[in-house]
Length: 354
Image (cartoon, rainbow, N blue to C red; front, side):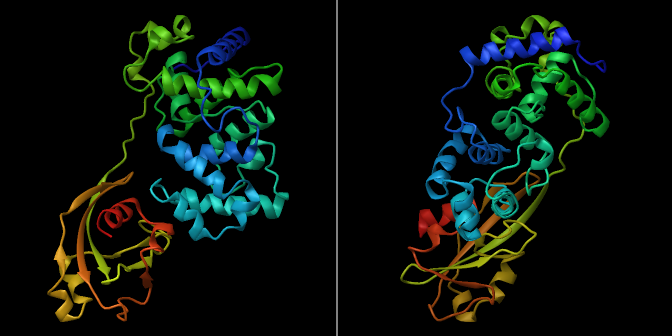
């Protein structure tokens, strides 16, 4: 494993090469770039966790229209936040986003803290997100280490330590810090941080990296070893599971649907959803016998979560509006349900057949 820290000359060349490359070849058209507004940078960083840029762009712009600053976000009902987040996935991010905004307003008078250490005390902000905000917005000399950056650094350094081990992760973070710019930090750190993210996203990609276009090619250990796709090393794999769920899609003749807010913790926590059941028989038992016989099974489909595959079985039934199906749910008219925070597969079903 590569364990020695880069020399001062090495980190100076590394940082300068990345900054020059970013100015000419990096991304410059993303709506959260070119700003030191901590609210916008923080919002983009949270949205970009586990989510592609192409998907985030539209959500980011819609969020800013509805919540133009951290005070507007903090003052909004959580259901409004979840409604706008619907379809973006990983909904704990939205709940933490709301809690974080409230804490920034209540504890910091609406101004984000300027150091990574302080930012990490806020809900939903980890070390890498804190570093991104602190370096881009406040020029702090602190390293980010998201997936793209891990890939760039492990390849450049030839760092073959297993990142499933916390000690190796810490060692890589130490080397990432040593590679940071050392002068003119207010100008250099925002550009450098954007550069290393851009390089990982567009050139130093997970598969088929474009090494011939990389500004680090001549000094990259992975290129010298002719094995860039072997980095980074991480042995621990996510253990996936599978679960079958039956969805009670109850609707009225005039287009209202029955939705219940999901408990926390659990799948789709805090979102409005069809009532979920572990079996077709359990679902049928909740309905009056006459309605159970009219329930229609729709085609089942798979929905993929991070650690689990959900096999969803929608069962649709038309029921009288006066019927109360469960103590936790309520009827939502056709004009109401689209504004609620809904899991992506539920929204798709309703949009297609509601």
